[in-house]
Amino acid sequence: MKDIQNAIYSIVEARGKECYCILCHAIDVADVQNAIYSIVETRGKECYCILCHAIDIAIEHQPTMPKMQTICNEVRIRTGKKTNGAVSRALNRAAKDIWQNGRRRELRAYWIEEPPTAKELISLISAKLWGDRQG
Image (cartoon, rainbow, N blue to C red):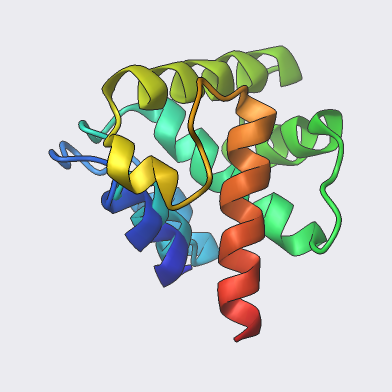
């Protein structure tokens, strides 16, 4: 989890209210959080918390990438969101915000050179973090 947190924190400049604190610490996704916050400029947005969960779920399924429907359903259960559509919208907001406001240098560490879809963002970050965990 610490590697995900570091990756996230390398993208963001301000940490805000740390929305992930209760949910993410409960599932130990600190590495996911760090990964996201390493590339994003602002923190405390709920969509980043949702993204952390999505990346954590994708890592659990590695070395294959699960379908987005599977990811959204598992995130919905973890977070108490009412619908998979709400999760999907949050993930799309996070991907858009990261592209528009993220740190480009850190994004390149995840092979992101153009605006990613939520699925691409989750896939690339989860694959890298899974690989890092494998040693």
